[in-house]
Amino acid sequence: MVILSRRSMLAIAATVDVALFARPDPVSTKQMAARHHLPPRHLESLLQTLVRAGILKGMRGPRGGYSLARERRRISAGDIVRASLGHAAEDGETRNGDSALVNKVVEPMISLASEAFLQALDQMSVEDLCNKAESEGLEGGYALNVDFTI
Image (cartoon, rainbow, N blue to C red; front, side, top):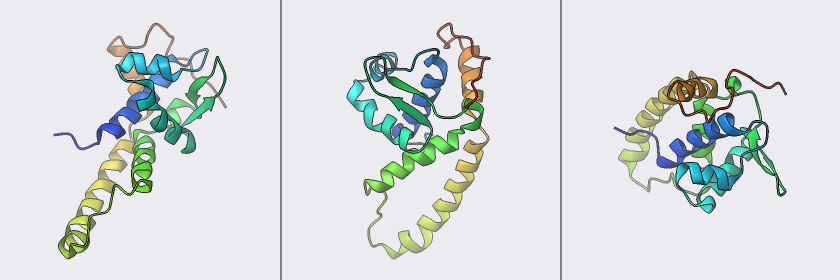
């Protein structure tokens, strides 16, 4: 059973992709899109959401792209999902209508469960996900045990 939206999972994957491949140069949208078999335009708004949330840094120009805004051990999957969900709320995707049952019973209970889920995601860092990617052979040949300091 999938609990996260595709957008939230893609946001986590994009952040881990940047953590794995943004050394020494930033990751371009085109490079990332090719690795994930997506059109670059599909990723751009998601990446900008992550920049606004302080998870990624965007650099313009011909050698521009994205890098992490903080150390990967200081970014949790929960941070990334909250950024993704915040963008969905701005787009009005969370309105449930005028159902009293939904608004007074279902939504508050689901909110409690969602918060517990996000707290569990807070325990999973981008560092943990990078280590898993390395163990699966997905690191692309970059040394993953090096971390940067801001």
